[in-house]
Image (cartoon, rainbow, N blue to C red):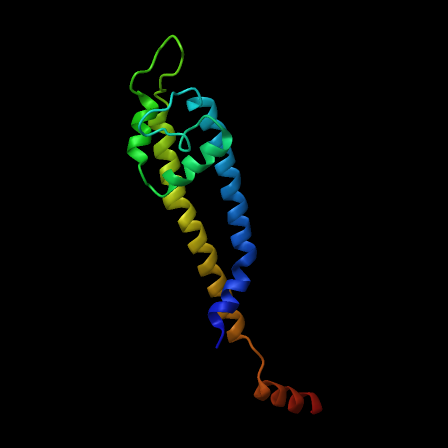
Length: 148
């Protein structure tokens, strides 16, 4: 029948909770990204749209990195960008060695597992509920016992 659709409907509140948690974590990492790497000059990997100079661009960059696309290149550009000037403060930060691996691990492994866990939990719950369904035979037995 419609077991998959019913399972997805049962899982919607859990998906919403995971999505809210994910948005909060995106926001926190974006704020730290702007604070730590916002002053880095644009270079080969940090372009007009893929950088940490504004909150929106940081969110776009984090989304791109969460797919593991160009993760190592952005890490390198944020640690020691080419042609940086120490006096201007547009050089990188060693914290990138912690920031990016934590982000990639969190976004690729942890969040995917949360979505799968919510789906499996809903599927399990739906299976238990379908096993407890009342059918016509249960009503007949109840009626017989009630009349006794």
